Image (tube, rainbow over all chains, first blue to last red; front, top):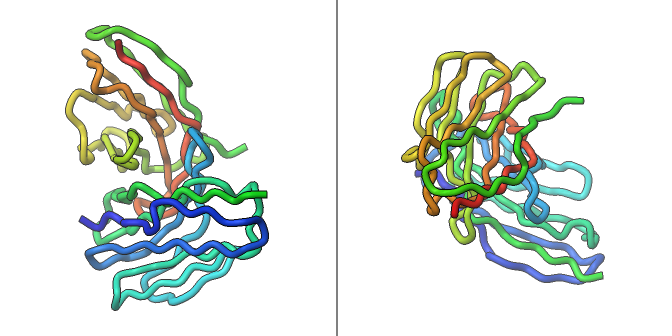
Length: 112
Length: 112
């Protein structure tokens, strides 16, 4: 299974600090995606990084991908209370089927 | 506005009473999926559809049915709900199988 496993399971930081979340997976991928979920709500797509990319930025988000280590990281810089949410990685493996497999996520709490 | 809608948002029912959760998207996406989210288990895919009249099982399909008669709609059917189907359900759609997924707001189902 290419399910992503996020680490840590929970993270608490102060506003203004950076937050780093990691994701590991087991098989080869075409791309890897990160999603955010505010409590009880639908997931929102944050960023997609392709297997031939090593780093990608979007606003305060920075994603890295190391396919040799089968790992990815999501960095949120200058965090805000509104960043409090669960974050999920979803590796997308080979094939045409819609098989993004989500892990259990990292719960980020940003204290004001 | 591009969106995925689900109805109902909340439902309390009793064991054995058939129910349908509707899902509709207005983005002309070919791919649609249903997930359930349970504490400690993350999101698990129930069924997915790659196009009209093309559906396939996800990771936890037991007790569920789906149909895809129109491109925009992908209802989830519980023929005889049981308490272990109490969960938070999400519908999602995407243009490509492994591209960005757009999630609905979720349906919180309780089966007594």
